[in-house]
Every structure is written in C-alpha cells, then in structure tokens.
Image 1 (cartoon, rainbow, N blue to C red):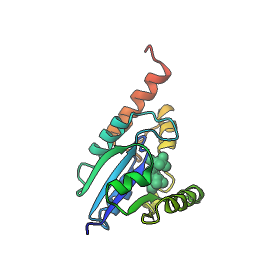
Image 2: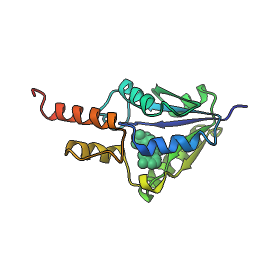
Image 3: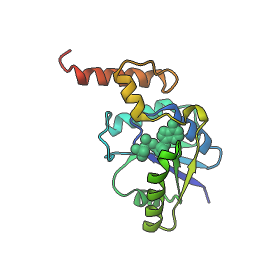
Image 4: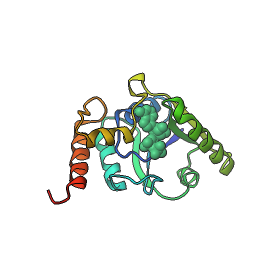
Length: 166
Ligand code: ADP
C-alpha cells in the first residue's frame, strides 16, 4: 500500500520552513499531499487559490507531491484521500501545546489516523508566515525566508491594503 501523508496548513504564504518540511517528507513517504485550508481560523492575506498557486510554483522541482485546498473537518479529508498520516512541523516549544491538543483531538475523532511531526533545519526554526507578513509590511528584506516571487506578492498586497488608492 502506498504511504500517503497529508501536510495541512494555512500557508499564508509558503515559506522556506514549509518547503524544508516537504523535502524531508518526500524522502519518507511515497506521496505527499499539501492541503491548504480554504477557511483557516486566522484571516488570510491570500485567497486559498493564491496560496495553492504560490505553493505550486515554490515546490515545482519536488517530486511525488500535489497541492490542493480543502474545507471542513481535516480528519474527514484525510480519510477521503485514503491517507493515514498527517504531517505537521514543530518549531519551538511554543508550537507544542497547540499541536499536542490538536493531535490528540484528531486521534479521538479518528483513531486510524496518526499525526507525525518533523523538525525543520535549525535555520527555519523561528520562521513563521505570521512573522514574515509583519516583516513584509515594514519593508524588510525577506530573501532568506521566502522565494523572491512570494516576497514581491506579499509586499504588493500589503502595500495595496494600507494604501488602497495608491
Ligand atoms: P497552520 O495555520 O495550520 O499552523 P501554517 O501554514 O502556519 O499552518 O503551517 C503549516 C504547518 O507547517 C504547521 O504544522 C506548522 O507548524 C508548520 N510550519 C510552519 N512554518 C514552519 C517552519 N518554519 N518550520 C517547520 N514547520 C513549519
């Protein structure tokens, strides 16, 4: 049986931390589905379609993956995809509490699905989409954190938002 992992998230926008995790995952699993939450808890800067597109461009050289968006209960989506593994990233201890709660809740909802955590390269341990958005809005150079085209889209969007007429 093919080992399929689902890597769910908001990806608003994709960062080198996400890409690092995807590259690690394809070494372990036969196929990795990157699942973009259409309606995340937090308000997204980019639409689900835009987030999927950016991920597609940023991961174009990585084999055996596909990228799609999903809505509704995550464990239901994982089951429909005939996968039994959900993949998440662990950065700092600060991720731990939320992830622990989520993994145990999802296990209760569907005991047949396991959540597996991976740690990124230490260079990306502190990197988050949230931080990137803040830095972008202040005009920081994001070269070390996201692909250039993502930086450009992010800055264009955030500048447009703060100055809709200009
Ligand atoms: P969510 O909104 O579901 O937390 P994100 O898009 O922020 O989604 O992240 C998706 C997954 O990728 C999460 O498991 C998150 O912990 C992980 N992740 C995000 N940034 C990094 C990073 N720099 N290194 C490793 N994992 C990361």
